[in-house]
Length: 216
View 1 (tube, rainbow, N blue to C red):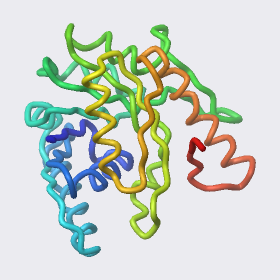
View 2 (cartoon, rainbow, N blue to C red):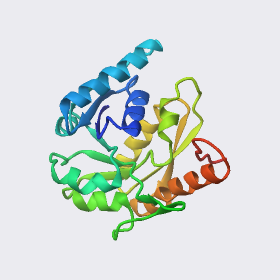
View 3 (cartoon, helix red, strand yellow):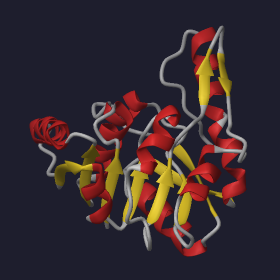
């Protein structure tokens, strides 16, 4: 599959790109194409140093969309609206939201938009017929980049289109040590998104690092 990552130069975007690139063609996108190219070269350097072959390229966010079948929106919630307003070409694509709306005050809290979740807001912003799923919400950036550690992670996937959800679950499952779980329709995304602030609070108050979830 051809995967485009909008906002792919951030920690989450780079981590997902590196994990997917041994098995898929991955385009790292950015508002600044030279920044995407630099991020791509850095990721390739890390992977090559580990003896892992990968298929990565760096382009603008728009090129990442145009060149891909599945688009992952690896952007902070506060940047969602301005980023999406500058992009087009989502028709016929599968769009994946790993976005978690939250704020850090005395502790982390979930702050969903009026639509109920970031994923539902993404769907509202996109053209009719664009297939939206939520996935990758519950994995810390450091986990994606920790190539010295074997992954053992669960990733809930939500979506209303069965074919799109199946494709995203296959994508998630193509990463060794990561198991996708069908979490239901896109309306369930709010339950998944709010797990991240919960895990951050657990990590903080229990002096833990990179807390994740698993289903046994």
